[in-house]
Amino acid sequence: MRTDVNILGIETSCDETAAAVVRNGTEVLSNVVSSQIELHQKYGGVVPEIASRAHIEKIYPIIDQAIRQSKLNSGDIDAVAVANQPGLTVALIIGITAAKTLALVWEKPLIAINHIHAHLQSAMMDTKDLQHRQVSCGLPAVALVVSGGHTSLYDCENTLELKLLGSTIDDAAGEAFDKVASILNLPYPGGPSIEKAAKNGNPDAINFPRTMLAKDSLDFSFSGLKTAVLYHCCGKDMKGENRVGKMGQKEIADIAASFQAAVVDVLVRKTQMAAGRIGARTILLGGGVAANTVLRNELEKMAQQTGRKMLVAPRKYCTDNAVMIASLAYYKYKAGLFADMTLEAKAACDD
Amino acid sequence: MKTIQVISDSVAMTFETGKKIGSLLEGGKVVCLVGALGSGKTTLIKGIAAGAGAGKPENVNSPTFVIVNEYKGRFNIFHIDAYRINTIAEFESLGFEEFIGPDSIVLIEWADKVKQALEGLNCIHIEMRHNGEESRIIRLYGLKNARALKF
Image (cartoon, rainbow over all chains, first blue to last red; front, side, top):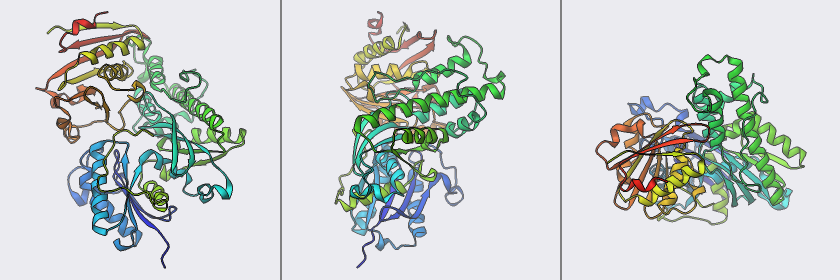
């Protein structure tokens, strides 16, 4: 009797259209992400870069490719999982409609996935022991998701039980990277370009603000930091000259490094606070900004100093993908947590 | 209708100004915000959403990445950020026109990037400017009873 569980995952919450097939939650059979493949030639015209109904044009070829790459037949797929929140509603709907259609036609269960929770699954994918409390007791964990759209801390009791502890009240960390990059005339996306520029800079050159909010708050605010960088470059009333064009590489590098240090500092301090509060034994890190080396290193250092284990998503699964959707869906499948055909897109999520 | 100008001297006052604007808003309006990075657009919108009856202001955050946030207040509130939008076609493909209706208000940051798509709509225009480290100039056109905003 076949006991393997193959799940098709679909992700369309923002810019990326993605599909993947994952076996038993950890074995990746295929992983297709729209920005990483060439669709233009096949489908003609320009595919817009930003989330929109363009997902419609991409969803079928991407699912098709994910199934073909997995070397499975559609009959071997045991369930269809889809991110239904949070995100851009018009984009989410496309993934949901595709998933419902396939589930209906194949007569297989439909599984609804929270996109942010799935980012954390990326950090747990290679670690079977965390999935089973009895094996190594790495739980509870405190989980940090940092991306262009989200900056959130969770209390993770197990794969399926996540409690939101705090999130950004204005800009997400990844957004701050993008906007500061634009202030410094560095290319988009800002994450990698700031990190690159910061390599030759002094992180202590400028003491940018670390916004901690109320004393025991686990929420984040990065809007003031962005504005502080702007004022550093253009003067406090914005009436002064924008000096960025005249700055040498060293000065740009110092600003980038000092900005990055301020973001990482806040993220690490809040994560440590959260870990202390819930008695976390493990730190989990996921989301696009989790690709940042300084953040990975500083969190790792904090974890070591406080006697905690640190698990971080592999770089290839930091940005939006469907592997994390199909992987998390396995645990919902095992728990019998299925959605029905009334499943809707939700722009925001409560948890 | 006259242009109203408010000078805010703090984040808190920008929020309160937004709250008053939100309390004056009628369904069907499109609020177009323009202003540089860090000029307080998201803060003002937190206030507008609060004034329009949306629950927790801390849940109103920047939709730069996801492009559209949705909140529930006296109206369905659609909070759009056009910062990453490159073309009008892209903007229109968001289903933007479906957001507009008697039971909803649409708030657009970086509205200057999608000007053509907003022509002929029932718009309120808000311009925000840096005026010092804490101070911001808020200029407003098209809001009924806007004189109530004067502190």
